[in-house]
Image (cartoon, rainbow, N blue to C red; front, side, top):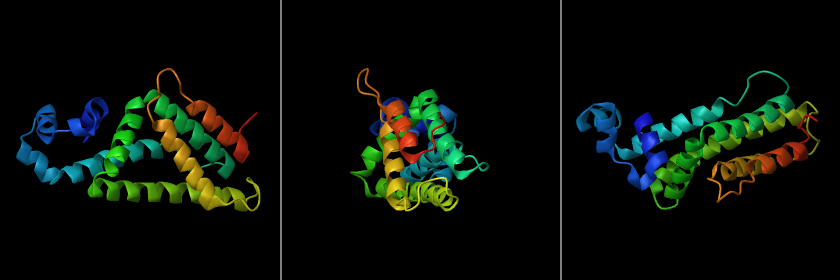
Length: 177
C-alpha cells in the first residue's frame, strides 16, 4: 500500500502499475493480488492510509472549539510536512471524475469526513463554543472543501492555504489570539 502511495505521489494515478508495486516490495504479482485482488482494492487501501494520516490531527480530548482549532492547525501542518499526501488526494479526486469505482471510494471517504467534522461542530455549538444557529451541515462542507483545496499543490509560488485556514479559524471564532 505504501509503495502504491509513493507511486501515485511521484507519478500520478496513471503512473500506478501493480507490477511496479509488487517489484518495489519484493513480492510477485500473484502475491500482491492475493492481498489486493483489484487495483481498486489497492486504491482503497491507499485512500484509507491517507485518511488515517488526516485522522491523526483529530484530538479526542479538550473542548470542542480547541479540538476544531487543533484539527485545522494539525491538518495545515500535516500537509506542509507531507506534501505527497495532498498530491495523492488530488490525484484520486481527479481520477474519481472519470472512474466510477474510484468515485465510489472517494464519496464514501468524503461522507465519513464530513460526518466527523459536522459532529465536532454540533458538539461545539451545543456547548456554546460556536455561535448559536450555526448551520453545521454547511459549515462542515465549507471546512471539508477548504481543506480539500488546501491539499492541492500550490500554483507557482502562490499558496493561500495557511491564509484560508487562519481565516476559517477566525470566522468560526476558534482562533487563539
